[in-house]
Image (cartoon, rainbow, N blue to C red; front, side):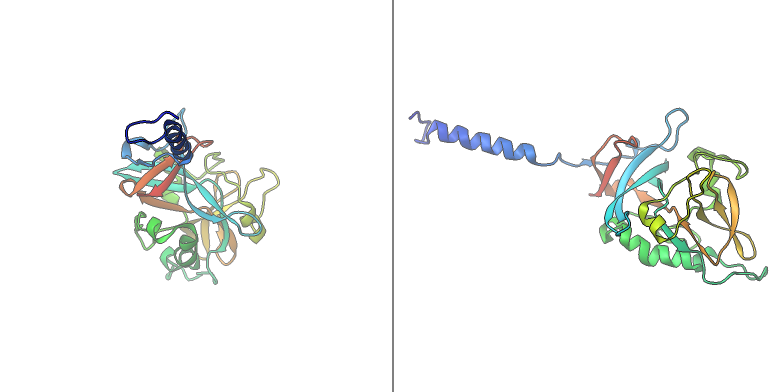
Length: 252
């Protein structure tokens, strides 16, 4: 048998080398450090970028799956993300705030409490939560979208809430429908909460055709949350950012 220096058989050496190469080829590609230049908000003609980040119950049995987020904006190293689907069905509050002189702040609502005491811990690990940016006005790390965010033209939305807006339209996950989210037959879409008060006892919602409507708060509605995340704390595991091939984000 042929031997190399030191007396080790050539065939055994080649066999070991081939095994090592095969095993190495099975390993996942090394994560790429995320850079702000890789992300953008909505652009006319190009639409949105998409990312997978965190997990959440998705089907009727509550099995967890990666969550698809739409990148609404990318500024100063921070991404503004909104889920592509309505991911849950939750009460806004347990009673109506009918007193015009004592409006219910979103920060004090049951929905905000549920988002930041329960939902955020289902969505994100502690390490992932450390990448999130605390939002103003007591919204915490995870929140229903504001009317301002939903009328931000740089995010791709119409400047007003009047009339249909396909960009605001959404459908729910099987999990959300199982919990009580309703499908509007005409469009096949569903409605979801915003943070903003319309009048005593009522809040702005996004209707099934994407217009801004109103609903009483002592009831259940769709949750399509937003969050803000720091790029410098993330890596990109895979993906190109397209909806069919979203960036898969992970903590560095």
